[in-house]
Image (cartoon, rainbow, N blue to C red; front, top):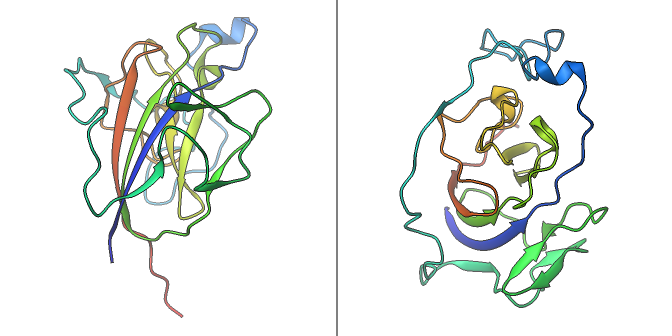
Length: 194
């Protein structure tokens, strides 16, 4: 059974400060990590082609009303649908604060449609994975990457909208830092043989 979730998450992400080194001049990634099963690429492969950058129009679902059957996970006022939450709530959004860790929904979900809205930090600090890095975990191990990928050459399977460590997004459709962006994720939960 598919469930619709509507999560208007204002992820004003905290960028991790990173010092510039000579290593920053080369493409980020690795050449000594395991090969991803069924692919020719390594996890976070430095040589994997980065997704093509595309210019996007207005986000049609930004601020839209949720469907009538949706479970609203964040109402812009409180975090009652979340546990392990130390994020701050203000001006209708949740913001990650340094050292606050992850948060998770109190309810458990399987297959679903998920809508999120997020903004990366307006001030660019750091590079690669040190720029507004976050993610949406689905069913435990699956993470859809949230990252400031605007003019950011991080490894392909770590770009914004990647299935982190597995598949890069088809394109890099990121907006500039500080602008609101949306994801509409359709997740089919895996089924395991007994």
